[in-house]
Amino acid sequence: MAKPRPLLALLAALLLAACASPQPPAASNPVPATPAASAPVAAVPATPPLPAAVIPQTTALPKLPPRQPRIALALGGGAAKGFAHVGVIRVLEQAGIQPQIIAGTSAGSIVGAIYASGISGEKLYRRALALNEDELKDFTWSSNGFLKGDKLQAFVNRQVGRKPIEALPRKFAAVATNFDSGERSVFKSGNTGLAVRASAAIPNVFQPVSIKGRRYVDGGLVSPVPVLAARELGADIVIAVDISAKPVQRKAGLFGNLDQSLAIMNQAALALELKQADVILRPRVLSLGAADFDQRRLAIREGEKVGREALPVIRRIVAAWTQRAQLASR
Figure 1 (spheres, one colour):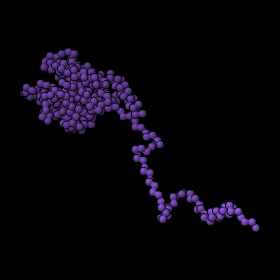
Figure 2 (cartoon, helix red, strand yellow; figure 1 turned 90 degrees about the vertical axis):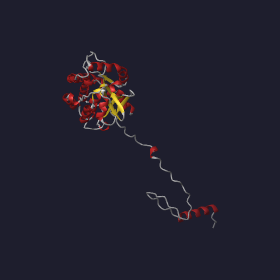
Figure 3 (cartoon, rainbow, N blue to C red; figure 1 turned 120 degrees about the horizontal axis):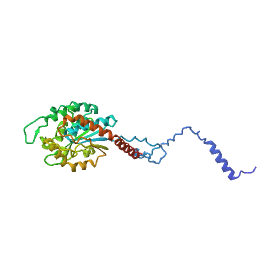
Figure 4 (cartoon, rainbow, N blue to C red; figure 1 turned 60 degrees about the horizontal axis):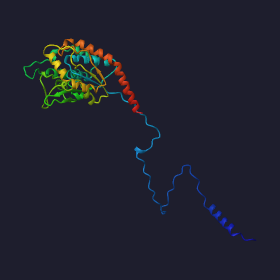
């Protein structure tokens, strides 16, 4: 019998060894085997998870719709001509335009503060018609002014529910002039009536108003239409209502001369402010005198007229702003 070849013998031995060590069947959910305790295992550092900020996203996050523009009213001074502001506000609201920010100077601060208290344009209109001049007049003998201003302060605080400026539903600022330095002062917090009183303290008519050791007078001397103050409050679009331009017809008497003097003094400041406005409304009330409270219905009607005339322009400006915001959000 022939001897088996060495190579064939080796192959046969390997085959028999393999058959003697059967492999376990593969599990459907394989779990890594735990090495024996005696077997040395090389330490493999775990891969740290990526920070959440750099984890790639498989789907794009939804984009928020662009916000609506913050519309502001900058209401200028002009004593009794300030009733025109009421007409402008009434028409804007009727057209669905709701200003969120109000900045006022002098008469504009009175109307603006009351509107900022959260009432509607229609209610503001009714209050304007019901106003009794005696609610604002408190005469005194003084070389600094023949009206103290206490009544005006109390009237405004009653109208706004005695809320401070920072608690008013609409953002509000009253602009006054620092009597000692001549600088513009913007009241964005504190006693609403006191701030309005300072803003409307026409020199030689109302006594200067003392606040925290400083004296203040009418804001129309430095900021006849407070557009810059409206921008400082965060306005995107500013509608300026200018009733402070030079009167068409000069009226005789103390108030006529005073109206004319203030108009002449603030022309440079007026031009600077109006450059920053998006829309300028000029109610046709310049022939009215500073003390013509009996002409309030006329002033309101003129405010309504110029407001209606401006609606197409205001809507175009709002639409253009919204379109730019949409493009920027893409």
